Image (tube, rainbow, N blue to C red):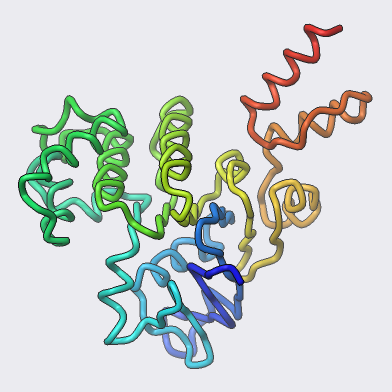
Length: 281
């Protein structure tokens, strides 16, 4: 039986007692080593769920079950669980603590009691991975929004988490920067097949890169499955104010013309196959 990284059963959450439910009886599980995307429009409850999984909101309703790597969030396990999770928030200013990029990446390493003699190598490697090696001595407040997101990701990757939570973590990046960061995440996944990734986003193109997709709307999960399965439900996606990815729409249009390519939902892969198809004509 596959080991589960995340188990959520009948999870409900309100910010005020007897207030409206931001999350309403949702259930899902994520296997260890899976790359899962949870998509939803603004106000669907995505960020609230991210903070619950990270242990920042603990007042879930009594019948709710939440387990991370077979551990429930309680006094005994909370510190262990947080030690396994790395989270990058939409607004990186919320997680900066150092006076420089170097200090900020070092902060998490110091909390994990990493050997000081190994820190510089880890810091420089992580900064280089996200393209921020030239900014190590800069103050975070002097960086652009996209650069801050890169630094926040570097700080998390330096810790080699078992569960990586990305909460709109590329929202401030331009399309090129977003592709670079997502490629980096996928590369880390190849290096460590046991790394579990949950990408919480409203960007369907980003979600298309995942192995499995969950769709959250008005606090409820309305769809789940592979990308191809989920994005075939056009009516439900439209009602949730979401579109299908460009690659899915392109693939569907090509099939209608009798051109059958792979079922990949990644633009680069599909366009490469289309070029190969054209060259054979």
